Image (spheres, rainbow, N blue to C red):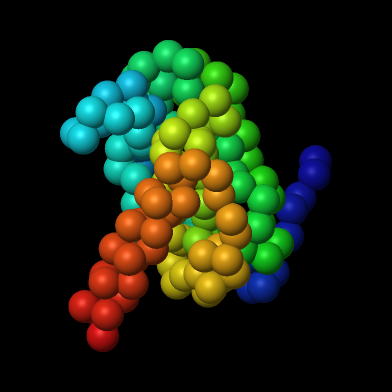
Length: 153
């Protein structure tokens, strides 16, 4: 007969891990051909979540995907990329700003930001050049993020 002994430290680690998962939340971002302004976009384009939360990218309209943008991730975060025309999920644990785009339509402004906890890498993310309309959309999203930050103080 196999006996497993539990130490106080092991019990504390297991309890902490289960509590973190209990408090994690799930969010949806829809990939759309026609958002409220008539353009292809993610909805919402700006999402604030807590570390450990999961984001489900929903292929409401086909022909889109979501993939992280090099340089617009917090240090140590893994890049993500979903398949075109399919749902996929990503759990984000490292605090910071995550910039992402639809690979086929990013230059047309189909981009978004996820802020996990505090936007610790915001300045670095803002410095990344993005082509076409993506730069204008990111500028608006960062302005909205900054306004949210100012209002919270």
